[in-house]
Length: 209
Image (cartoon, rainbow, N blue to C red; front, side, top):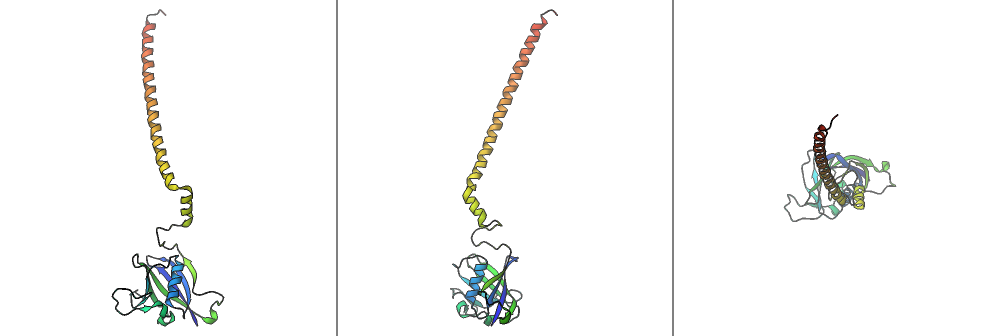
């Protein structure tokens, strides 16, 4: 028995990938499941593999089911097809398509064949052996904070906080208007004082000094 290590790249960013290890006797349903687990996707949608080559051309499908569409050749079924039976090259390629509506696409490359004697038999296969990069989020947008930020947002209700900032800005504007009114009042008072001083000056002109 041999163990096959595949590198599974997200098509939109090859810096994001997962390495998975499977037994060559396991089938494509198990490969399907470990890929979804590796990228934290659910298993609710349709999926298919394509045989491929070095330029990522799509060949015959290895599908979860036979779907209502035109096929160049009848698809193989995941449950009935062992992974080892489809390895015809030392760097065999497959393309994996998940959720035909959103078309999540992953590029799969065989990067290592491990002999039975060199494998760690204490591990459960298939397994994820390496994770690189923050993977795409199946629903919505995934940031570096991930679920943590969502928890913070829910706890502190940041949506209300945003509205609060708006009110604070309005308060600030009202404060500015009040300040302008005070300034105008001071100017008026100063003008009155000036007038009084002017009148006082005329009064003192009549006095003998």
